[in-house]
Length: 309
Image (cartoon, rainbow, N blue to C red; front, side):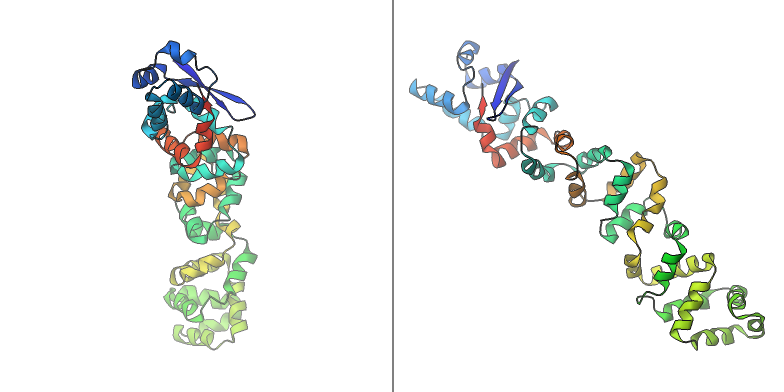
């Protein structure tokens, strides 16, 4: 084994190098390699060309071949990847995040506290947020923890259609419907048939109808809201995200991350971007060696040009 050095202009990075591979592939003796100490690839090529040796061109070719590059720089070694990555700018680090696998991004999420993870989940589009939460909880779990004030706001939302509310009441057992009406309008409701009770509700003014819904017992509101969200899924988008994720605050971090496996990388990347640069470097080090080699060739030729033997 040998060493590579990368001169970034600020610091020299020492990498492990597979000298056996390098010398065998290019037919270069170790003694000759030692003569090139601290010289860049470009400088070596220039010296070799002056000597009339054509394998300098092979070096250039290898530095453009991701498989050979990964082998020469021993990118399978996480330490080597980290030593290169930690000298990239913060903007360059962000450019590397799309090349990480979902598992790598989720692995990086462990550096956040639970409250921070919940805060970032709350910023997701409703569809993605619900997909995460419903991995472990139900809509009933969400409503059971929702403050009464928030439930009342939802019941007066313009997306709540009266016809869907009436469907709920029509589906109730007659004794349950009677109980709800007696609680609000008195025992005289017992004298009405189920049909008369429903007509009475239909005849109410919109404001009075909404106030009636808001005065119902909590368990009845939950039953109604569950039905409404099933009939009108768009109503879920009106729920405060903090109320949607409230059940998750009872979970351990590793269980939350397990639920987040349903998220595509496009939603995880902005979260990882919120890590401090030093932690982002550690996360990006999880990148696949072959992918990293290709990215170095395509996106960071300046880094390769500063590599010296």
